[in-house]
Length: 632
Image (cartoon, rainbow, N blue to C red):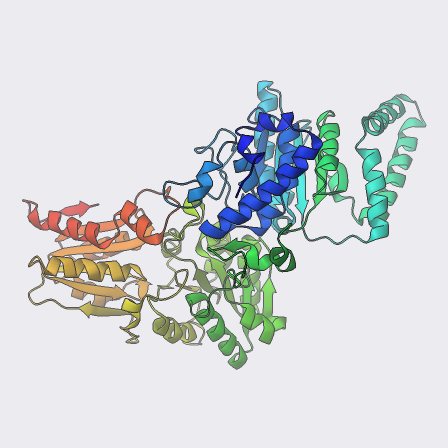
């Protein structure tokens, strides 16, 4: 495909040379480019199609990096990347050694901050804006935030602290609000008035004049402001943004680049803080995505002609759907079970529970902290809440886990999806922390390696047999064929593989077990016999497990978890406390900034693939000292 205008854009300043007609053509080319490339590489599609004109207008008016644009979540930044010299990088979008799917200052000076989680942009922008004011530096700081992020409390914490930030602009990318024609016409009319400098100047002049009029000035000013407030309430149903100190503009058509540009120029010519409300359509320009934007939010490769299945609804056979179907069944048998998620109904497989038990299903939006404390409240009244959240987002609620759930040992079950390595999304979305931070508070953690184990252990965690907080975690996608063949023994751990005369044992859990098994086979071919243990209950350990592991001279523990505080460190300590003095190898994640790559590639980078594990054992066996500790 040809993109004649886009190919001429190598930096944001090139945009300023285009005529209005060329700008509209450029927007069309950008959409065509995104469709062509994302269909081949996968990535976030609908949100990026909806933010094209907005991003072009921002770069036509602003001057990055002198002005800074902070994206919330960041998955709508593809147009921004195209306009800042990274067009060629889209051939390897979200691939090893390619460009990230999210903003990252390591990648470009035009990226103000790393972004992968929601609700963060406003607080970041406030901090950046204050830093500029304190240093006396010019330029604007712009936070681009979607309406979905307004379901998280951190946004409101930020709005409550905007102070006198005259260099701050918040752009609400609203792709859900529906405005009728009559209201829309009024909104456009008043928006035109409010985005002219004459209106703003008059507003400030009247305010200054009334402040100087003795006796009647302040009451008259208050009356005028009260009248304005009533008008705004009638038009917009809320005055929250202006009540919090913003100059509010909008709603504005987010697909009319000229109108957006005019509004931005007027806003940037006046002191802030400003709040620009932009209405966009997710999936704009691609009919299937417009009709069902949820299906095209995050996609794998697909056929542009024949469209794609829903990528956010986990495949028919995945840990998420196996969990979701089983929880739905358990919900029918136990009316105390409630399902809670944080804007991830389909991703966590809860659509089944939602359709069958709508009164006991709660989607709290991007509000993980509320989700966990809400669950504690339900549990305190005798309900059995199941908090279903991706591992990377669960870390946002750690204080609530410690204080609101764990102190009173409330009966809350945590179902942790996307546990372990996650492909393509890179350092912001890895599930490598939950075993460490949950084990720190003594929470029982189960990590099935196949569907059979998930189906066996979930009903037990939901039964009266267990009380207090507990967690079950499972990876993204489907089960490994190699691990599926082992089924489920019903035991908390399995002596999975026995090699005659083995003095070395390899221990792991979840899908890393497959790499450990392959490492044992490699070593066996070299006459280095190794046994393999698979943990299902990964914490705390039973005394029986520790006694069995103590029989070996060399222990290797491999896990898709941070090394510091991980399950491997707990195992080493338990062995030492029991008097074991063998050679211990802990292979885990030392490099926390993981690349956007496939899971096998991430395992190679972190030393958790079979060959690296086997090499760690070879080095331990060949080491001159017979005892001690070796960590890799």
